[in-house]
Image 1 (cartoon, rainbow, N blue to C red):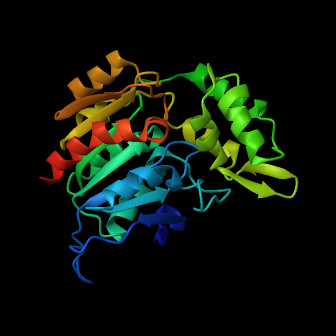
Image 2 (image 1 turned 90 degrees about the vertical axis):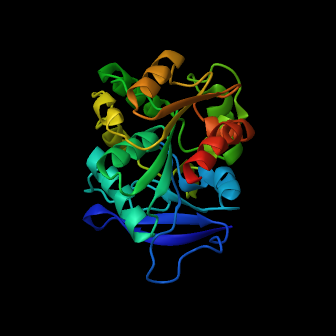
Length: 288
């Protein structure tokens, strides 16, 4: 089970953070906010629960908290809120401070990974390590944004059942090259039941607004400013190519590289054991 902790993000946006497992016995007493731990940041359209498997094994020895970022999961989705890069980074910074997670490792997937390395570059005093999962540092460009808008329009919403969600995203979606049950489960987790069927818990227009704040720019400069140890992880069939991943490792002052076989973009979700094998030694070294 996960325990919800409310966090106030920038501009007063209410964020839902989820602590998995009991806090370790070394958890500080009130007034001593100096707990090393992990903040887990999901990707675009994701939610904190996508980290459940990772958070459970992390919580055996450390404090593991996953954040529903603004516009996602159980966090607020205000119509007039900012969905800029700065807002997401500010929210993660606020979460670290309000949760007492100083000297923490940030683990991010896709968009969450970009947030993680941008925050690590900004606040080296708060971050002791970063795990970057399948996120590119290169600009993706206008064509990519148009493709995403067209993809959202292709969703056959509302879905009649969760089984229909799993089938469409795992098999019928034109973006699926071969059946991928894990992908179907991933998207089933971000649906909720409405009067007319199952719809996403997020607003696709907010997702596009969020995405447009990073797809037109490259992010190599901020990557080079990350001074703590950083691990770049990619799935062999993911969106981050090997050459770009290795260049990211070269640019990072203390970069390391790992890849997970038989994994696509959702590395931590569809190959949890391979993901743990890739990440755990890095975390042990950081905390040592």
